[in-house]
Amino acid sequence: MTQTLISLLSIVFGILGALVFNAFCQNKKTSLTALVILGVFSSILFSKSLGKLGVSPNFIVQSFEVNYKLLCLNLSISFLSGCFGTQIFSWLKARFGN
Image 1 (cartoon, rainbow, N blue to C red):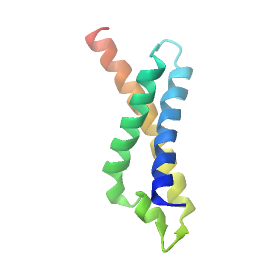
Image 2 (spheres, rainbow, N blue to C red):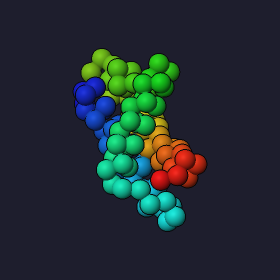
Image 3 (tube, helix red, strand yellow):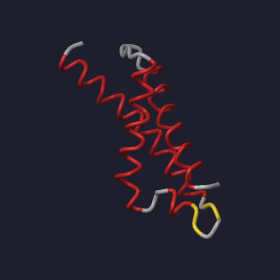
């Protein structure tokens, strides 16, 4: 695995987190385009901010070996960031109106 593939997987997991969270919350109706954009940007934001703590793709792939614990941690952080981003977006949408 390369760092680029890990970053793309992280973004996909952020999108999936946003979509799954929106599917389980029946009262939150958000368009698919908004959820995809939200998942991408929240995943990138959390990955960049927590990357200095050791969960960036550079630390996952060191010396051409994959550290699977860090990979699972990175993907779960991306998934949760999509959920968290959707929650913040729905809160802002309710606060400021449509």
